[in-house]
View (cartoon, rainbow, N blue to C red):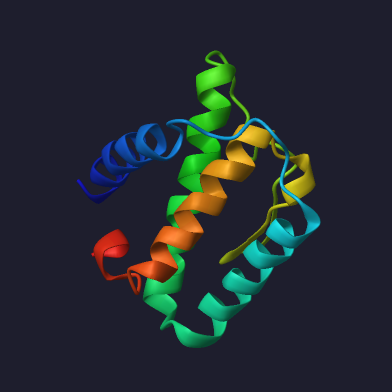
Length: 120
């Protein structure tokens, strides 16, 4: 039940976040901001909330990939790789512009709402 709920939630979240996106790629400052916020999350959040945020980000990545590659069987799209059982490496420069913008919006939204409304 939990996985289905996450998929339905990320489907709605993906659609909401993808509305009216800028078509320009992220600037270096915007990329740095994403990295800084993710490091902030790692330092400040308890592991369960950090894990949920990471799951949502990975779900957004999968959602985007399957939307544009509907017949795919790829497990880790856009050169994402599994570091260990709990960690994935996502190279932001390997993501399409629209997905970078979606993730940027999600991370900012999570921070602005103190993670409560996003993950609970």
